[in-house]
Length: 318
Ligand SMILES: Nc1ncnc2c1ncn2[C@@H]1O[C@H](COP(=O)(O)OP(=O)(O)O)[C@@H](O)[C@H]1O
Ligand SMILES: [Mg+2]
Image (tube, rainbow, N blue to C red; front, side, top):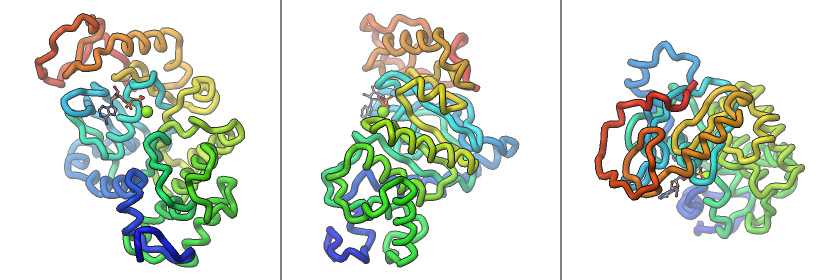
């Protein structure tokens, strides 16, 4: 079979995986899971049974430039957390660090053993021009069950159809993905997450470029997953949406500014601090800065100092 499925009822996974690029993050997340039941976890976190994710002075970045640093704390099992912050504040970077597509520059992200993750990347990172149909995209969610070369069974076809029905796209199986509206694409990606049946669900800006009806439907699905005690982190821009639907919030500005109950986290003074931190960040700083330091004066940060320190008056990480 060639790179493009020609038969509608059967498909082979491998060629699609090679071509779909970022959509294959479903694979990465599952591979990474295996690695996470490490001795490191067992030795040090035995008592933290309630933690799904533990961040330890985590620094993530690109090349030698940190994009987010000094993240400490835990994401409880079964919690529903909004991740908020200005553009460029490190929200997507954090998602990638959790999924494992980005390795920490320092510190660590520890996932509790046996936790399976599903990751929905930001729409801007998806290649929509790839000639795939809705069914191809959604079926990727079955990969953990079927394996790379698994055949697409009648049962799978039914699961895909049910997932599409659940997101309001019944009958869309054969639609090319480049013909979908923003809302329909996002629904399709949620159908894939549904099939993944993951304990940890990471959604990066799922409400962007999406109509109000779709936002409502997707929120309902997130609440259903929350009711099923899955652990969920969602990058969201609309703070009203966060206040109405997310019990907990992590406010980022290249570092955690506040983290905890949404009402507390989104207090005006925290939002102001986040803005100050963000505006003060020097884009090319190779390493971190203490809070209150003036970042904007072309100061030379050629030092690679130890990340073991903590900023005394820094943000609270719950
Ligand atoms: N692939 C990349 N290579 C280099 N820098 C990147 C890359 N992706 C993101 N960045 C930088 O990391 C910072 C945080 O980006 P990101 O996590 O995407 O922010 P957010 O999702 O909050 O908008 C930004 O300064 C951005 O330019
Ligand atoms: Mg982003």
